[in-house]
Length: 598
Image 1 (tube, rainbow, N blue to C red):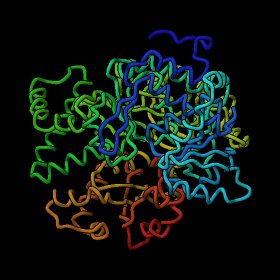
Image 2 (cartoon, rainbow, N blue to C red):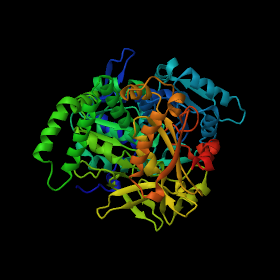
Image 3 (cartoon, one colour):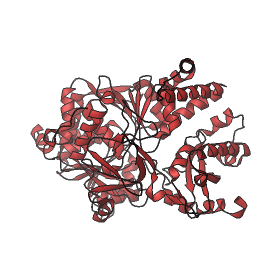
């Protein structure tokens, strides 16, 4: 491992970091976006820089000042990145807003961050924003719409601005300057705005490039970016990819993700666990529809067994190697093709992937590197490395971080990537910090090599009536890995035993029913069907195998409505709003503990 450069050797800000790479890759492709016919359009480093400069000039012409907050509300598309870098290039602060945000959420963020200038994607977004702007107390004054040609309008408006103005503006920010305000997705109340600095991103980029050079820094490295750029992890990924020259293919519509994998052929997959679960479940359902589900499951077992054997001292036996080769020819190679055929590495974050899926993907030739982090530590503090990855852990700390485990198991961190505090919220900042250490709210432990294992959220720990402390995440993650389960909420605080509420995956249901020889059923019918429930009972039993009897699920039930972003039970980053679920489904929880339920 090479030594990290000193602060004096860093690029002076994010713009300088990215622009240097684009100069070095002036004639090389650095971005790709799909046209209306889903054909990929290439953008070179020189073209990307020209697009940013022209947009930056337009922002200056429209009155954007240094230090001003500028909002971006859009799906993950090339315009997002062009705007992001252009706003930094004029010395301003891009502030992301989830494209699924309600009027009240837009109102809160624009007011708290004092956003007068907002760029949105669609006419629907603009309508919501304009309803907010009508309030006389709202700072929001100008709303531009990407779908209505605002990028061309900005370029036209800035045609008369000299290059020297942008050069001067781009040099204004120092490493200590605020770079952005990222609002947490708000699982427990109103979102807090984490202020992240240029140092946070620049220092982080150097460390990630050093540790993942074999993933990012080689000719032909590429990925499809579909994670929402309003989330801190996707935002960090964006900066690292732009600064590394890794080709980004933008995917605004997650429904097109699989065909985009096939046409783009990425070398790196960046996703949340649910995507890996969906790929596995879809492959299983397709096999079932063709009458080959037994072959699929046999092949999946060979993949898992092979991966586990690779981690053992003796390695894989000859008979296992033969079985794995047959499984690869029959099934595993086809799944690699679904992912484009060139991917050898994947990075997964936001929730645990699960040991079983981790081994499955490694066995088919895709090494999934799990990571961990929070917005307040610039999205990523830990990640597994290709050279030594421990499935089930989130890896070791990235350069620049110090980690400590408190007496109660809470993970504490400090370092160069620690945020500058919550915007206009000194009280919340003080509550999150103690003696320079950020209290993550997550519970975990480190092994003797510094690999971190996450066991749950401190605030989510369930204390049963018998005094047993239970971390619900272990059970919930295992149950969500079952093809038929969409969401799971483990309950039992101050109750005599642990229970759970499950929801069904409506997309997976038809294929699952066919694979199990069952007739077509609606979600509501399936939730009550004895055979469906018998399979769910087995899934619960398997999940219980990961915990002690006192922590195991004794009673469970199925809700007929799923938890989604649209109905307000999931955050835009797909985290469960547990408190809201427990409040709104309190009667369903109580039924688990009614005398007749025992």
